[in-house]
Image (cartoon, rainbow, N blue to C red):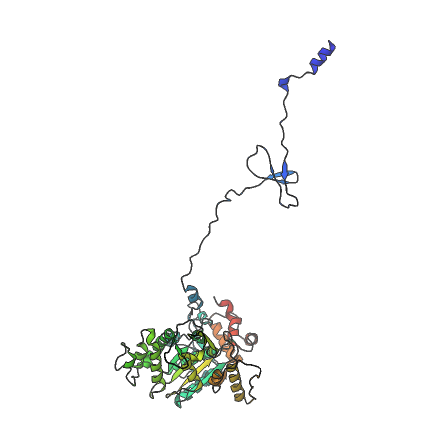
Length: 471
């Protein structure tokens, strides 16, 4: 009996037993040599990720919108030519700049007068419109920082304007090439010469970028029965005529045509027309080159006409092989383009100006191809002018061009370098009066900017003092 009671006492009813829940172990699936944190799965858990960090488990977020594409905000695309127009824009005034009073306004003999040395002179509004029509202003210049355009009358300016007056008085042709370092002010010197010519009622013809004539970006056509084969550029000639008529219209309207040009078949040219009517008669590109020839003849060969000023910027582009091809796919020399040939003949002295005038060409150091023949000729002219021994051609070079050498062998050379400290002070005082230069202008500041700019290189002074103010 005792054994029975003992067995009953040890017996536990089946209903009172509670089975412990089966715990599913956490299994971390890891790849060998993996640095990614392991993700575990628990049976019966919601579909959310777990991250094992040591002994602890931390619930992480799952990318709920992983299949949703990101929203891309597309900006409005610029119109054709809009980027180039923004890059080439020229701003000549700034209403936020202070008005500088007390400065003289440019007149006919202002820049030829030595009393105006080291002074800033303002450009009248009418002259600004004429210079804009000639594309005399450059996008790289700092015109947009000031209320109105002003220029510095420097020593080279007075010297050049005196020579222009002498050429007009004696009815001679001044042929000068402006050389110098980068950013020394050669293009600005050409602009001053154009301003002087326009104020003195000259006919001004400007080639703002010589590379546009030779880089094969404009149309060209061969001239029949020409030997060697010559090419003319109708679209460029038409644009050139329009610029000449717009900038020199008042002067050209004062002179009648010397002969009948009915052979040109210009329906817009009256019988008793003026030089302005001739320049404006070409309405289509196919008539442009004959009109350029007729206008050039009227200005240079007929007495009683106004003096002519021709300015060319980037001369070295005209002294090389062009990017054009003839029908045999041979490279066309730049001097085989008729408009280039006309300009080069005037620079070389092969074209006489019956009423006087000048041909001014500026070299470039920032965008210019190598022209050994032109460099040699200009170096020889500069050495002869300074009384030094002229350099001789390199006997080991084979890329000399006789046509280029003869074109610039007899020209005059004007070296344009840095400005003096007095001229630098005048420029900086104008900057300070305009509110662009915030530092005090004294001897220390002027010497500092003058020295940092390479002894008065005008473009470098602008960069050192005004680059932070430019947009």
